[in-house]
Each structure stands twice: as C-alpha cells, then as structure tokens.
Image (cartoon, rainbow, N blue to C red; front, top):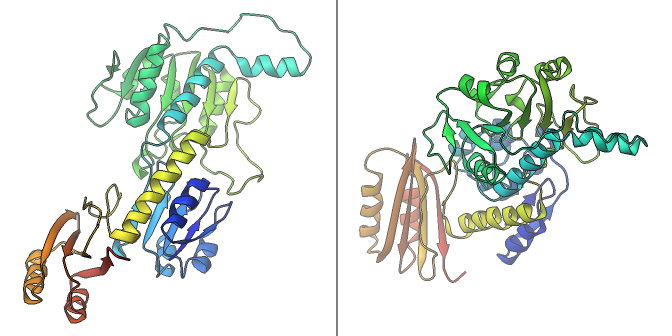
Length: 401
C-alpha cells in the first residue's frame, strides 16, 4: 500500500508505517484541490495537517483511498460526509498536543500581562525602558475560558497553579475541574474575565462567533487569546478594539486565511500592533507533541489498514476489535438497515464457518461488523456479501500475512 504524508508530519509516522510494510512518501507542504485530485489515485493512506483541505471532489478522485489521518486535533478541513459516503475512515489526535497548546497560552498570558513584546522590541532598538507601567502579575487575575474541552480544562488546571481565578463557558455540560466556576452565559464570562482565551472547535456554527459585539462586552483593558480556529474571530473588529485601547493586548495563533507552505507571505490586519503576539499556528507544534501525534495517528491508520480496527475514527462506526493474532477477519461496512447482521450470520452458517469472534457497531446511517473465523470463507460467499445492496465495502485479513 502507498502512503502519502503531507505538511511536515513527524518522522515517527514514517517509522511506524514503514515498519508495517507500507510504501511511504513524505512531502513538506500542503496540496491544493487540483494537486490532490491529480496525486491521490493509487494512494491508500493519506496523512495531513490543518492546511490540506479534502473536499467532495478530492474524495471522488481518490478511488484507492482507505483512510485519512489528521495529524492534529481538528478535522474541519475534511468533508467527513464525503469520506463516510465512500467508507473512508478518518482519524485524528484529540489529546496528543493538549499540553503544548496550554503551555503556549500560559506563556502568552504572562507575556501580554508584562508587555514583554514591547519591552524586547525597545531593547533591540537600543532603548532602556525600565518601567512597571502597564505591567501586571497574572496572580489574582481572572481567566475566562471559552470552550472547556480537553485543552480548556487543562489550561484551567495550570492557570490555577499560577494563582489565577478560572471561569469557563461551554455550550456542552462540562464538569468543572479544581476551583473553576461555570458561567451561565458567554456575556457573564466576558464581564468578569481579565483574560479571555478561546478553545472551541471548528464546526460551522462557530464561524464568526467572536466579533465586535463580543469584544465590546469584554472588560476594559482585558487581554484576548485565540488558539482555536481562525474563522471564529473577526480580526478586523479585534484590530479596532486594540487600537481604541479597549483590549490591552492579544495573542493570535490561528487565522481565517493561512499560508499553505513554509516561507510564504503572511497577511493580517493585526500585523504591526503594539502588545499583539502573532504566531504561525504553532499551538501544538512542539517536538514532543508532533512526535506523539506521529505515533498515535499512524498507529490508528496501520490498525485500520492491516486489521480493520476503527477505534477513535471520527466518522465510521467504532468497532473495538482485538488484535487479530490467528485466523482470518472479515470487515463489512454497510448501510444501517435492519437484518444485515442476520444475513451475515446466515452466510457464515451456510459456509460452515467456525466463528471465533464478532463485533458490531452502528453510527448514523452506517453499520460495521467484524467477524473473525478460524478458516477463510469461500470466495463465492464473500462475493455474495460484497455485492449485496446495502454493502459499502468488504475487506478480509489474514493473521499470518
């Protein structure tokens, strides 16, 4: 099987996939839609990060594609509906770079509070500005976290260790960690927070959720951080509030439009502003995080391609089948209609199959059943199942291969 890894994915992924016998090609940059359409035929597994966008047209052209690994947290760059329709599994790394993002945000809170960007710039200009004006400790300040998931909860834990008071708002019902307090509304959080940090996901409903109205409701001279998604914030409105002095400083790691390759020109209305930290989408880009993501996602891709396992797939039914150590395995992805399991088992009975394990799960409009047998099923029996009206795909594996 051929594997294509884009966007400087960590060499750990190459090590894992080549160790499973895959033919791996590693590229440094993202590919455009046209480039993907031309490149993906013949590719079985694709690894991407956030700058490669997989559309309906891309999936239509990628007829050999079995699975996509998003070597990052988000999957909003992938048309999951198009992937699911074709039975292409999508995996991501929801936890591997959590600590890296948290440490960046904590560092930015301290740097903004102490106005370190201005201090270091003046030192480079030869200006000795030894003044405490506008410089504050983080201890005793209130951090408002919008989006209290994996990153938000850990950020709150670390911030409390620095002596900050933590409040949070999330549309989902989340358990508060430590001494964090849940706010009943976003407006309530904005009115109390000295620092607002966004950690929401990339679902379409979050586009433009933080604009001029929300910025105006923040406390005067508060700080603003966005390390979530670029499309969440109106950067033009943020610029206006920074220039007016209402927002004392900001740290932005994600942008509505980002360069696709290393060295390309970066354009933003936020460039050149005092006490504004701009970073090139590096929240999770530490060596430790990228190595962990490399191992984690590549292992999921290999387990799916080699054994049909779908644990932590974001779009296909999750079947937590054990590792196939002996015998044979049949993976059958199908439309979620009544009677499929009965038809599978009737076929197994007719073939006099010795079933050693069976695992089934459904998700939305699809179902997935894995059946392990002592001996391989006859080809005519497999063909009958693969050609059924409700079949999406059928694959087989041999533990000895």
